[in-house]
Image 1 (spheres, helix red, strand yellow):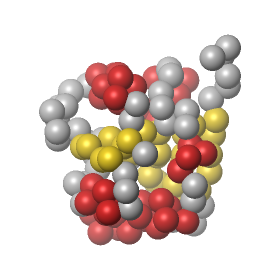
Image 2: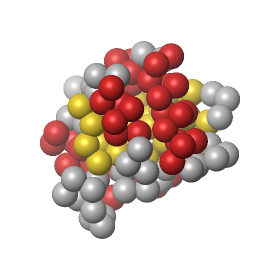
Image 3: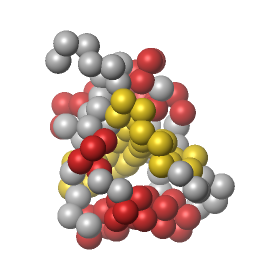
Image 4: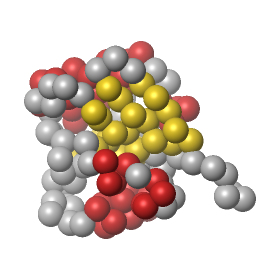
Length: 120
């Protein structure tokens, strides 16, 4: 899977996701301080799934079409806590089913919200 870690994410999940075979970029790879719509547009162009803690970025009603977005809502959002939870989810769930979906990850659940098909 092609992944982009948003600016509000630590860089720590990048090597963990790469070790699982995912091509992972961070916003720090050229989009640091750019507005959300530019980050999302770059992710769309590159075909990347976005991982964020930003509720606004994950609101598909506001952001429009996307390749897929994971919204982390965990109690311990430290670099270690985030890396641990993201790694666990990618090891125990099937990310191939997340295309064009918003995946909401909490400490105890993974919920998947799918965009309505708009003729494509």
